[in-house]
Length: 152
Image 1 (cartoon, rainbow, N blue to C red):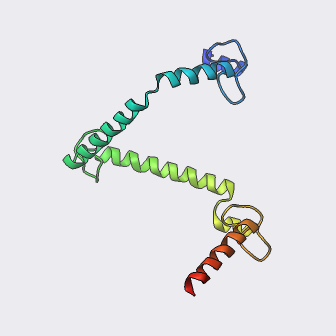
Image 2 (image 1 turned 90 degrees about the vertical axis):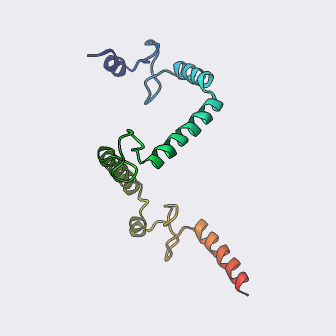
Image 3 (image 1 turned 180 degrees about the vertical axis):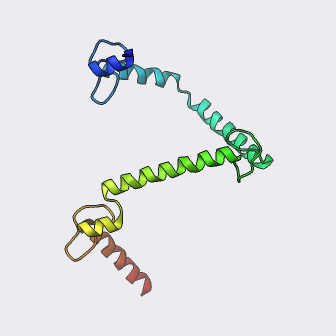
């Protein structure tokens, strides 16, 4: 058993190894606060801004030259080489499947909400005979009044 596993199993902080870790975290509250302070001291917003603009310039340069924007090989599939193109497609597919699963769990898909009798926009209980809650009913009513006034 590694130190990491042992500390996790015992519920101890992975940094100070003495106090109980915060719920669903691996550090205690004191160490989390220390880490935040260290990160705050280390972070330089001007440097971050310059770094972003430099990365953007490199991206544009690679794109113009026909080089893969990830690995700098020759771009054969749009902005990517063959290998990076496949990796990107797989990552996007996994991400979209994950997001779709989350939407299904939360019931954010309109068909699911209709079936359950929930508001299509926020997921709260819908007004009987309508597909929206009282809050959205008022919003749509006001929008309708404004549109009628514009037409006249």
